[in-house]
Amino acid sequence: MKVLTVLVPTYNVEKYLRRCLDSLLLPEVLEEIEVLVVNDGSKDGSADIARAYEKKYPQTVVFVDKENGGHGSTINVGIEKAQGTYFKVLDSDDWVNAEAYKEVLETLRSFVMGNQTLDMLITNFVYEKQGAKHKRVMQYRTALPKRQLCTWKDVKVFMLGQYILMHSVIYRTKLLRECGLELPKHTFYVDNIYVYKPLPHVRTMYYMDVDFYRYFIGRDDQSVNERVMISRIDQQIRVNKIMIDDVDLNKVSNYKCRRYMINYLEIITVVTTVMLLRSGTEENLEKKRELWRYIKNKDIGLFHRLRRGIMGQTMN
Image (cartoon, rainbow, N blue to C red; front, side, top):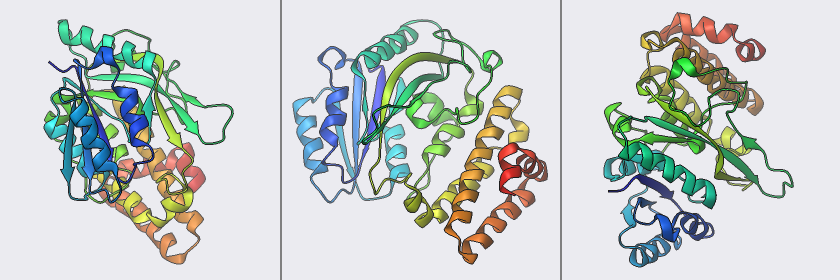
């Protein structure tokens, strides 16, 4: 039985892929994990590297080759094929910390073998920024109780900018399937949908204050680079609208879950708005106005909530 499936979406990352896979394939964990490498039509040597790892670790590494469909399509394939009780996405230019990794697996194993159901495990992640001497850590000590099974009622206060991101979350695989999560193809920034849509289905969570995920940033072509984001602004708008459409926040019964989701949606909408403003073109200014009209027509209450929010007031 596999405790954890780690999906490694792969596209033209031959420079980084070995580091990513080596961080996962520790000898003492091989029996409990599945490393699912989904190659999204790479044109470099990424597929050959992945095949070599599958040959070396036939009981652990599974290689899937597919036509290019974008990050979301690789996650869709991963969720469909995963054999692990829990599911983690590790981008192929990132890696995990070995000691934290073993602790995470030990915790997940205790829930698999026990009689309590864990829906979502949360860990810290570290911004591994090129050239930076001091590394920023995203942690959740003020928001979540440490190392105890809890529910939304136990959640404290998430500070501004302190959000659960794909780097920090491990979901129960069955929950992802049951909530109907399916990400759009050929679209960047779908990690926001991946984290956001399952939240109303999460009943139990567990926070480990360990620096597990190492998030590599600083590449010129990275999707979070501002220049790149502006060039892909239509995809950011698409993700923003899908988040609005996919979850009716008025039907999210738990107050703390609903409040968190509104705040998260607010920051995504602000990011979209900022990028549209910073582009400085009349075309994108009209797209900004159209986005806010879209929100108003979809949910007038949500529109006013976002406009009243601190970030929304600043933008508008």
